Image (cartoon, rainbow, N blue to C red):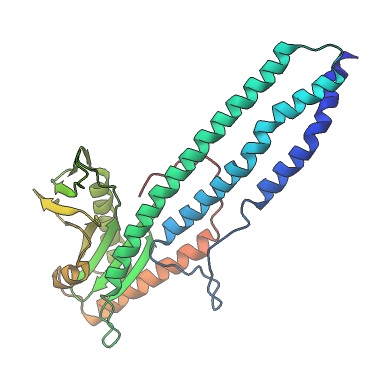
Length: 312
């Protein structure tokens, strides 16, 4: 029976299929998230959201790197089985198996290149968030406790990278990492101009970081007013670590800084006065917000390969 010539070679694919199942089962073996032994809540550090994205990116890299050889060898293994069971040799069919394997090799090469580039972008963003987080930690003064810093504060639909609470106001701090271009003679161009509607980088411009920071600060102000029962002075801060900032017109309610000396800039910025009662309400509301988010979300599911993750 002719159909057996195509069915019997599938026996040779069983070992490859078993290996593929093991790889898929082990892709989430590594989970770097750590939970508190006191209340089982996830312990959050500066850049925790990017750390989680980096873990998922490495899981995707592992999946593509391990499945690639298995998938690309499958047509060749099946073709060798066909040569054993076929009543006559069809060289066009063998060439088709070879071409299919070549195409699969190219596809997985492109996927691995994409994964490496994605991991580089996340690492750059994480480095900038860690730098800004360390700078913000300088606000905390144990002897008086007037300053508090929260990392990765969840909103209704997004995450605020940092929230700094000072005696003079609340700051929603967003961090953005951008690679600095080079001139023809190898010098870095690190000048960015801030305009009312956009950031003008060397060779391109963006408006989304400004819009997101303003949106985060407005959400935080409205949410804190609802939780505390009175208006809370809030300002958005966009940090661009490693860039030299030139302001041609900053949007109202927003600061754009390089991140250097951010602690001193926030300490000197007077948005209003937070009395002790309002100050304590703001701190309690932010702590409760983080606890509610941990209870509702739980462990984050891993994203499938190709999940759209915009660069930080």
